[in-house]
Amino acid sequence: MIDAAAAPAPSIDPSPVDLAASTTPATKTLATIVHGHTQETLALTEDEPTIERFSTFLADHGYEQETRIDPRLLDLLRTIAKKHEGTRIEIVSGYRSPKRNEVMRKKGRHVASHSQHTLGMAIDFRVDGLAVPKLAAEILQAKWQGGLGTYAGRRDRFVHVDTGPKRRWSGF
Ligand SMILES: [Zn+2]
Image 1 (cartoon, rainbow, N blue to C red):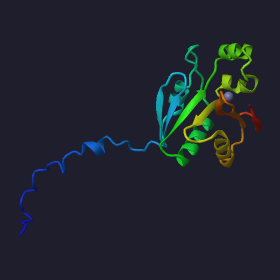
Image 2: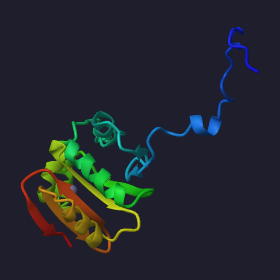
Image 3: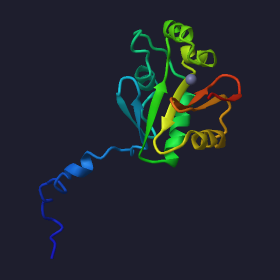
């Protein structure tokens, strides 16, 4: 029988610390974002990365410049990732300093339609296991209001999305 008047038992830790549980992130990883140039990776969850972190991740590393990336681009990646949990999203091109854009333009590399990159308003990317036309279809399903270009050639496979005016085109 329990004696109600008895002093409370000394408080002890309710249970041993479960190391596995305590290291589990609060929010699960939806996808891993990989930067095609730096090979740096970034976990994409419901809350991470912040737009500040994402902007640094997408900086123009060669020219040591960065700009704030339009949050709608990060939202779109999250929407796509939710449909392909655990996938890998490769960023082909993020922010481009005006200098880099000019260098690329002189080389004639489909840059005219890419000026939005110099404003932090565009990214080029691809998703593992998802063909470019399928990825483009999912972006349209997500009711994307900006620009959408698909590049499904032998050398380059990616989609370009930007938050400029609504445009659709197919590269090569
Ligand atoms: Zn682009």
